[in-house]
Image (cartoon, rainbow over the protein chains, first blue to last red):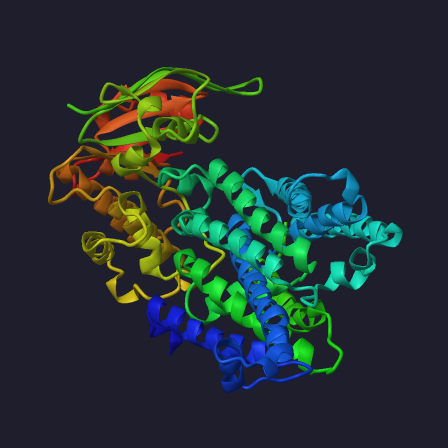
Length: 339
Length: 262
């Protein structure tokens, strides 16, 4: 049924659901606000509302936005990486982008005084994420083809090294946030503020607009590098540009919220199932569905063990790992062997 | 007349000489066939002629313009390549795949003409009724016909009588049954009437002599023979190049000579 809908209709449906989810996300928490109360706090606040207004504007809103933006980043990133590796099991958590970025950001947290330049965290996260992703890409690609087994193994190795580095750094850290190993491994939105939300918004907006032009090229790449080249696309330039744009947005998000796995895996997978594998569709749709998915996960994380909250990565792993396994089994069934 | 010419092409990979001083012209408006045993350098030569590979030495020209001076986006409108088999890891529809042929022509959204050309191309290969089917669920023959539709859409030229186009075929029918094999080659031959030149690597000598009207025989990276008439492919040449013992018998229906092997 959904397959008959036009892309525009699906974008619109996702956008409406996202709007509802965002309102819910801004309302839910230790203190709950109804939509009417939110309106009051925003536009008709009296002196008696100061506390609520501060909670709502300084905590709830940036958190809801940061979660949605992070989801959008991870969704688009998963889509781009799957296109690049030509494989549906790829996502920033698997190919080392997130773990490498976390290592870079952790370096800044621990040795902050040595990185006396603006946006040192995101910049180092970018470098870490880029090195990790390029390493996995180079290790798993030979003669223009991606070997799934090598890809998985290279991903495991690079992730392990990055996680070990981050773990070590958090152990010697003084900064309370850097000491928090769950922050790095499972992700959290508890530290959200307007500064972070705006930073991720800028990174996402730039990278999203940039990546949208590669929809056709990623489709053509599905045919193979040679066929893409015959259509006038230079696969090498495409690979480099995609690695940069992808790492850029993942690095900024990871530096702020830590590593959140599986979102980039699930989101494009669902979109392919309900509508199409066309990247022209997947890139915008995965931004919307990623934002929607992450907003819902964040709501669940805050509600399920109220007044405490769960790390985000626990929920994404519970949903994502079975999806990962099912895709892997499907691939094995189809290809017979992975080599 | 527009023509692709390769002059003094040499290509090495490491210490291996794959193409050794080859000069050929693909006759314009003709069905050019490249013949040769495995490892003769046929596919490498095709990749050089299409601009995918830059030769170690030598010069490729499209109608007097050096190939290296033609922008990839422009080249993509002049020539298209149908390879052996193309599989997709993801379930695009037949129409989505064929639409890729129009990618060089539009920005983000395909124009009405692009969509119309894709529909015509699918009609031509007989896949109109399967346009919404997922590509991975097709048979090998249908997949190859989808790819042909994509390639036809890429060099579509029927109405505007515009630039001359080139269709390259790299063993396009090697995994197909007789029906699909003939259908695909018939469609390729049909393009000759539409300001297009065909350059095909074929393995079957009888199929080659049936369709081709210009033959280039490669052996060990060199041109062993270049003839316009299939009858001029000598038994000696075929025996030597393909390491077989062949003879020819007349075909009483079409009057062509048919290759047989001992």
